[in-house]
Image 1 (cartoon, rainbow, N blue to C red):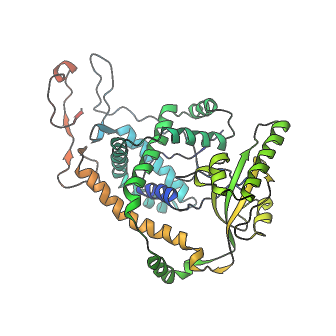
Image 2: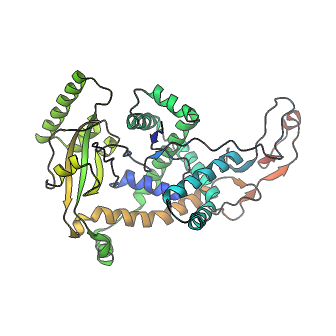
Length: 409
């Protein structure tokens, strides 16, 4: 069984941007087309991917040494970021993840194109790992806590895979060769990164109406579109339920729909009661063309107008209530219809240089050292290099004052 999940193993700047945009503006994600509008759509963050087993353990470094007292292998350190380290194994796993990312992004591409894409991204690999450590450290320094969100994200993954409990998810993760603690740590780190970027950067970027109009006028060809609907959902899961339980769930769905029809906010009901992975976004699913939804759902929503609510719809995986947030007709869309999309684009353009500037500031305030032979492409002037030294017994190191982080040879 391959698990669907929402975490990612290599955190790049593009991932940062995607996370912040999803948290700040309206993300446009696509659900599965098997009759359920929630399929594998993540609540926020990167698109769902298959959990892959980690790359084979790296061979012991040539200059790794065993402690005479403890029999421990001292692994090569590629970089030190304040009190944290990036090991050779960390770096090699990130390389493996990058290969997988490129293979998915450029599926069907000629090998030479894939190689060129990998080399272009690989040069910033260590930079991205250092960026991640800096952001995680700043989040912890600021007292950011995401433990509740970690549990929610794990539960989303559990639901996406039709598992009965988090214990079952843990077994499934470990069954694919992944450490459960490492798995949770990667989710926690991605959430910490999301939160600190949103906190530090979100308020710095202001986009005015005139700026939106100027972008629209200069890129009108981008907004000539086929017929589309933008949807939100309230989803109740029926997988693994018996007939009596399914009937009770249907009654709950009818009750939630009635509350919306009487004036309660659809997004608030979704946040409180929906069991889909979109609940934290108020149920927002995204925008769909004909052919991107199951025929069951397409036949319903494309006949509806902006603001209308469907009846309760039973699908293969549960009960759906859908809201048509907007219905776009074929042709050049008016600026008010595409304003959020334009704001997303402008936000991304402004975010990139500001985030790099912020990360440069974090580097200035931090102690970052890199092993010879590796390159941090965002290193600030005067950055230190890890000094290689011969291994010495623990007893000789205990009282020795270190002025620089050292690499055991």
